[in-house]
Image (cartoon, rainbow, N blue to C red; front, side):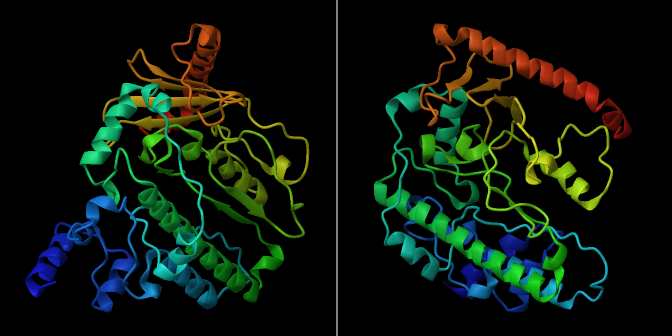
Length: 367
């Protein structure tokens, strides 16, 4: 790379920015240029990588390693150990570009990995909103991914291997943070929660990243660990929503839960008490730069059925999860499932009305 090219990329990256996080500052202090889409685009194989690239800067400057290291440093230097601690650590990964240090990716590349099998029936049954989004993602390289409508098995394997390598890198950082917490005495009275905001389509259902309501996107890991306080070694079966962690944390801290919260504390389940979970869970997504063909998308999911509704559209998705856990066969237009579709639409309508009523005082206070 010539100095002129480097300067063009560097100034282009900085141009118009008014905020630089600690990672930006650390890279700048070392005279390093962050790996980014503008640089990846110069690779001759950019359009073939599905967002999977090797981290080529010093390992400690990888975003996930840097975040973990900063958390360790903060914990090791925090002076007031006698005061309660609430700490939230947000790792950027495994977010595209999938960019692990190569030594983490090599073991996965050497293994046989399960890869998505996308059928013509799956694609044909998808609403036009998703069909258009697939085409869009193949034309616009969001987050350094040039999505391919018909990738090879080798391309899918590399993408998945690099994703898993990113996960392993985060896993090691979590272990180091726990070791630091232990060394500082925090784990004698602590609750550790590990979760994520969404999953990722790595070619699953023919899609890239999120922006759908398939289980692979909406089901996320949730691990709660509190030795001596909560019984461990259990997997709790039941429907819950991400927001339910909010009142759960408040309950654990002995803080009153506001009545306007729709979320439900999971503490009874964590303590081993009677808990059956929610009857239904919901998810929403509005139009953005990628999900462009609908104003609003809403999901309602019970134990055995899922419905996805698109505003002002006659099409949607309906899945019999008990018999079709892979969500391959869309029953939206199936006359035999018409009653179930209307049942779930009624549940969605009732939830929307009740949600507006339950949170009315909170909403009014935000005006």
